[in-house]
Image (cartoon, rainbow, N blue to C red):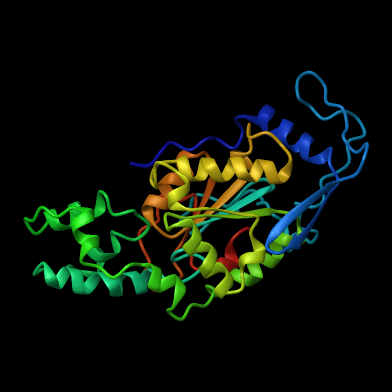
Length: 306
């Protein structure tokens, strides 16, 4: 069930405080071996009043704005997203991306590893049923799939018969999702911190990012082994917000409202929404899923924050 979304008009005080903290810093990010280095100019921090509002003279935050009207990270009244719910409103400080099926079209490769396992159990699931495992850790989705065929099969039993997913990230041919490199370059130009939040093991995500040439675009990775609960639980994205706050040099209060998430699975969409973020549901991969619960549905990564 979809988590109730936060209104864009609520939490303004916390959002303002976050903005003020960011405005108080002159940030210069450079990439060194895939890590961002943040430098602060001495004396750049400005005072804030007791209610969290920016003090007079606080400089304008230009790094998270698009300069031209067509590229601005916002929306005008009446500008409606693909699912009729309206487009992103405000200015993003943090962008969190799922990996499988979002940054790289790997879900179809995983389904390829699953097929022999289904056959070994004597079943032939539909494409829709096989896609139900995408974006999950399998603990609930695998038993649910087999239950439709009157079978009691656990995730451990399933994976015991399956070739390890490591082969996907380490040896199979991989390329970035169309539009990913351009989107990440656009976000970097405007100072938006980017991170990856995945159910896949941390080291495998980093390996794949290096192989497709995107490792330097991300300040951090949250892998499935970095958290104790997985999507659709909000914990992975809450962890991403925490790490993003460190990169920005701000507190976490109100940052979710300035964070966009890009996801391709229902479980990932639910996780991002539950964490309080604005969620893009992406359908431009080989295994499109029902992401209609997202704030906005896009068929191309080029439409994210466009």
